[in-house]
Image 1: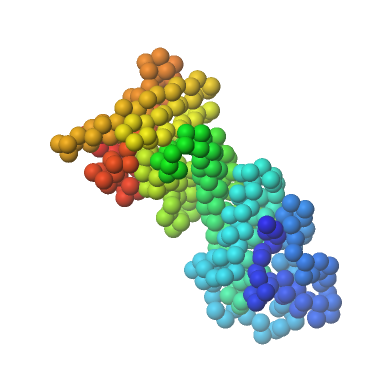
Image 2: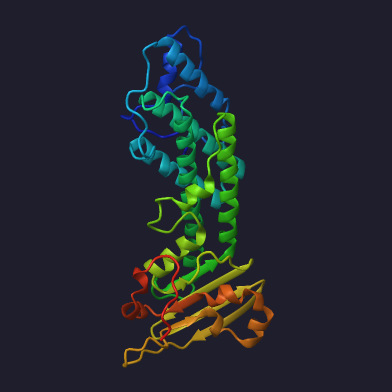
Length: 347
């Protein structure tokens, strides 16, 4: 799928059409590729930031009465144009995790999205294109969507890898847990360079820098976790699959760590790999008729042998904060209806 500047569909106003205004006003701005869709893997941003400024200048000069009549929406993504851009950003981030495009490609596309959104909102008479607060809102909200889609794409890459592992065991496709810390660290590193790309845009536009940490802390995109890998992982395996949970989403995993768990009727299979040191464990589940939850849930750390614990004692906090449990455990605990940090009942 292409995700050039923005894909709009046949009946949606194209922000590039605003460039025809310049052509009608004395041919003072030429756009040689007008009407063509571009491919991110081929085309880099070419004078896109300068082009946005020229368009705004020409609009004002050609139309003296041109002015903002509506004001900016609360979210620049809350209309068909924004929805299409969100989808394209997700495909961009998915392609990045699949290794189809580079870090530089993602940065370029973030910049293009900012420029395209600025042009579109100017065309819709919601901003002049020069308003500092409006431009800061555009960059901040574009960054927020990129950060969200980064977390989703990282979680999806982890899920697909786990799904392939689950197929080796046969049986159901919705009773397993998988964690690969490589995706946690890739998600964090990607978020860092997305911040830098957004700051580059604010610098080029000569507006105050966005506060990325404040945006992440106050984001409304939390239905399936926040803008980080661990909260999305918890939503996937605690709230959806209902077989695993993480007590504290802020705890970073050890590097080169993988975990796979699968429930098999009334027992389970677990393996943990840390720096190439792997342990395979049979999980002895049991159900009490007294109403106790004991035997239905285990801390991963408690299932490992003493030798492994001794060799990796520095990772105890993370391993103790991970639990695996029977699907039946959710009936008595309601854990799949709890979001965020949570210490589960063990008895």
